[in-house]
Image (cartoon, rainbow, N blue to C red; front, side):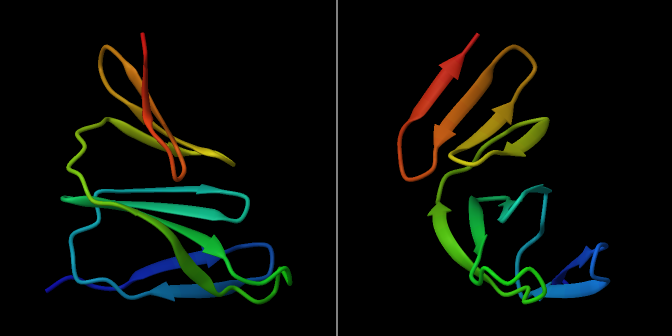
Length: 100
């Protein structure tokens, strides 16, 4: 049984609970974005409100594909998947670019 994802925002000491039923492999956070890698997909969440004390996230994009990576990085417009020999950059709502 998988537990929900708890994300603690230390500046306001608030706690966000994101329900999930799958194993979480990696989590990446950047400003108002939260990316969660699961075995068969990556979910990208975005802060729904401009009020920083209101921590409600909604799904912005689902990438239904199995990715093998050592490190997951989320930026303002990209998801970067770091592998041993290459970096793969995926534009949010876009295509995959391989950087060597």
